[in-house]
Image 1 (cartoon, rainbow, N blue to C red):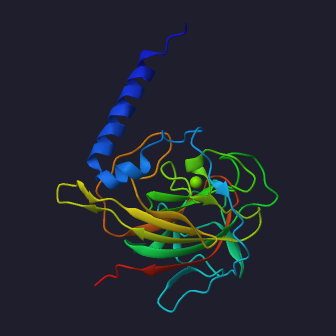
Image 2 (cartoon, rainbow, N blue to C red; image 1 turned 180 degrees about the vertical axis):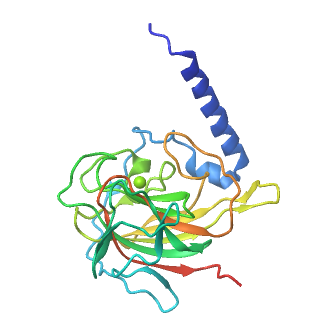
Image 3 (cartoon, rainbow, N blue to C red; image 1 turned 90 degrees about the vertical axis):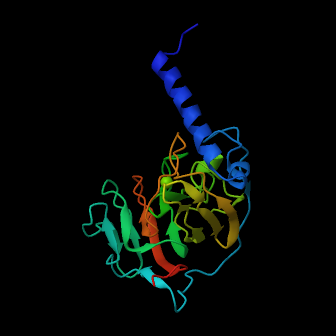
Length: 264
Ligand code: MG
């Protein structure tokens, strides 16, 4: 029998210890909700496919919303380094991930927020699994609601469209076909930390995908991440929203936010 190299065994032990430490640091409700399956388990049941019906898009921003993108310019967005965003603009319509240019971040910062985002997977569809229409909406730049072409495309449950990536699969799969506009309506409550940096209240997500509830007030286990559960680390009360460049030309339009924790 082939033995596993010692460093992999050690890495596995470290991961297990880290996961345990993260779980023990969380309130009981969060543990009960999200930690029952290994991350990215292909055994985890896939959400049922449900036709979302014909919802009307775009959804106009309410009067008190901050419009982050209306199709006309990328003025509200910058790169990681703070330079002007260079994703492609389809004037009057959309912006499109320019693969290889990196994520973009909002200049505005938010804590608790209601966020509306419309997005469309590339058409024709290319690739499969995670390599198909992958992007993401990151609240506070750390907590991802996955964007993926999950129309007739199987991947692990906690990595499909509407998932809180690596933690919570969507309750149902209400994905529209590639090229069709879809919507996320996200209610996010930021995590809170005490003076020592320990989390006192986890972040929480409620998400509607194409008008259908897919995340029902779930408690974040920590920052969303791939292959490893990262523990919370204390951060500012307000941070930018980020959109992910995962190498696929996903389109976005009509992005607006209602600040639920306005600056005083
Ligand atoms: Mg993603």
